[in-house]
Image 1 (tube, rainbow, N blue to C red):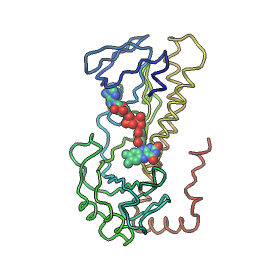
Image 2 (cartoon, rainbow, N blue to C red):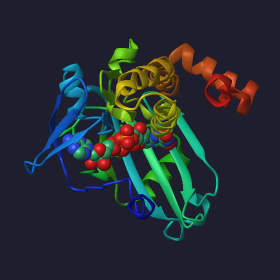
Image 3 (cartoon, helix red, strand yellow):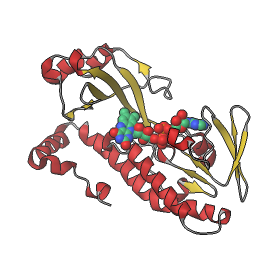
Image 4 (cartoon, protein in one colour):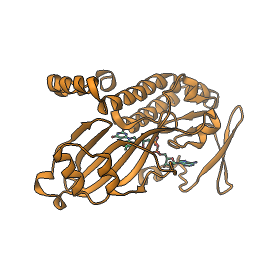
Length: 280
Ligand SMILES: Cc1cc2nc3c(=O)[nH]c(=O)nc-3n(C[C@H](O)[C@H](O)[C@H](O)COP(=O)(O)OP(=O)(O)OC[C@H]3O[C@@H](n4cnc5c(N)ncnc54)[C@H](O)[C@@H]3O)c2cc1C
């Protein structure tokens, strides 16, 4: 933020909730909750899962409730018994659930995210619900003993009900006229490929490239946004779809679960390589 504020060509306004926008052929005007109106040559809605800009642009209703609940905890490794401390990224997979743990802050803390399937709390927009560790233990009944011990050693969990949207179907869902969507506003996805923020960053890089192409400033903004959308929507849709599939594989039961475990044993880390995603 400090770096942004140092630039003369940026007017940063925080705590300014955008309520709506109005578009003419050469400008977009947004209105904030404080009643302020602001004009610009374009509007990029990077306002997340519950995007107001998207609602006005596409009018496609609220995000989809996935039925997946993310229990999250951040715990000091020194507060854990020695055998539960870890400097590795570890994923535990089970029927209808998975848990990922990894060290953060030079390994002093352990971040743990456990996804189970269940009923979402009413207030879906709150991503930091208080929760009862006992509920999580019930959801994990029957898992192996090392995982039970880890979960039991963590006293406090927060809850986030996961929502997403159908993968994009066309470029005009990502940009129309002088208005474009970026990141979760355009393509909120399940976190099972760990790519939501990654795709938002790729969107931003591509938007910058498209707008930087030479041309007569305002006349070229709409085509530039069109180019941006055209180059991004299919990749985003593919990542959205793959994230859903990964979740199904992580949570699989029966034969798929058996095949997954054998594939992991045989192919190991090679299975986690996704060339179309990482080698562009
Ligand atoms: C459990 C979990 C784990 C994840 N793990 C990963 C991971 O490992 N790797 C990864 O790449 N991604 C991950 N993600 C996804 C990632 O968090 C999101 O994709 C990313 O934060 C989206 O960024 P964004 O800027 O598009 O939206 P957001 O981060 O949601 O930012 C939107 C911003 O817009 C503001 N805003 C909202 N409405 C308005 C308004 N009306 N007016 C003005 N401002 C507004 C908000 O206050 C917010 O600051 C994970 C997500 C979850 C739920």
